[in-house]
Image (cartoon, rainbow, N blue to C red):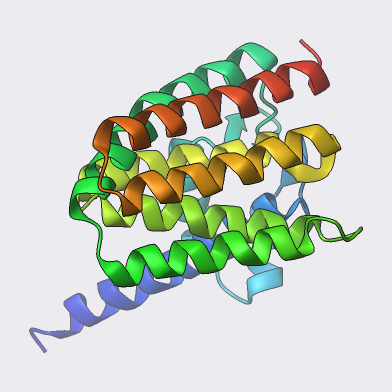
Length: 223
């Protein structure tokens, strides 16, 4: 009897986490674009749950910056302005450059090998058309692994949230060929710096890499 409330609470938390993760994934994939309305009724039916965990998941998504709770409209996928996007990339630059420096000091040989493998895969498919989703996924994996290699969980969690929001704002869809070539070259230099355990080099490359992406975004995104 005494354990029942704890079991019910745990089950509820699992349901909230599942709905949160699935809605977040659909937003990141572009299934629900900016200003798409997400109703409790629609999501409850889609995921075969009650409205209570949906409501909790939506509040969590709002707290993480993926949606807005608008009076009389409900939950709406958040549309970012150019100014907001630039702020996000500026903060990413601070966090991820620090993470890259830490990763250079703390990375394992296995992590370096995995980073090279990801870079190889990205370069192999970059010339093919219609490969934006694959490139986007690999890019996320590369950045996530560098954050993990920093061995700083707080830094990792803070940066991961901004990376996800960044992918909502912009993907490789709007990249020009020169932007893609520069990105791939940055990745290669970044991994070399991490392999060499050169903290200053790794941090500098990551800072320049994110600044380049931010500037490419400024040329394709409306103010």
